Length: 172
Image (tube, rainbow, N blue to C red):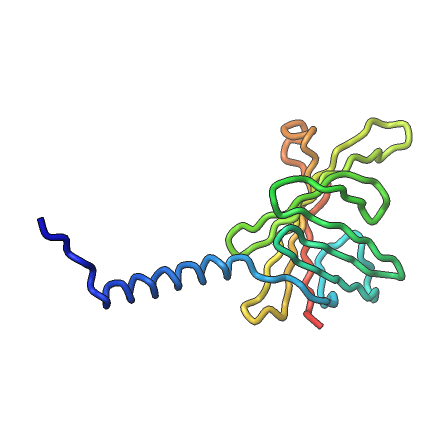
């Protein structure tokens, strides 16, 4: 039996195709590292009109470190990218856990914080999900934030306690 060896042209085309596929997969995980300034917001409960907010992001293969700076205060959290949860401290002080993951062209940041809205009331878990999207030229970062309360799923009858909001940042 005679074995047929693939032609050099076929091998070259296969190598090019594999290179294009790996490049396409790599671009799904954009590098969000940089310093950004808040340009526009919609219904963000933490940012008042006229305030200057900046966002410093350091991305490594293992984690995304996010520093939010506004009104003289700074809040730093490191979101693991390996599926594990890391410690999280909210800007208001309550603590919880956080994690990050890439989904298609988005970076998803999840935080879970337990808080007491009323001094003598029960503890409530709050889940915040941020969907980050970089523009094709990587100069604009759009963040959409949604908040839900996992322990009340179904009992709120679809009532949205905290409205979603969006922020648009410009890379410095």
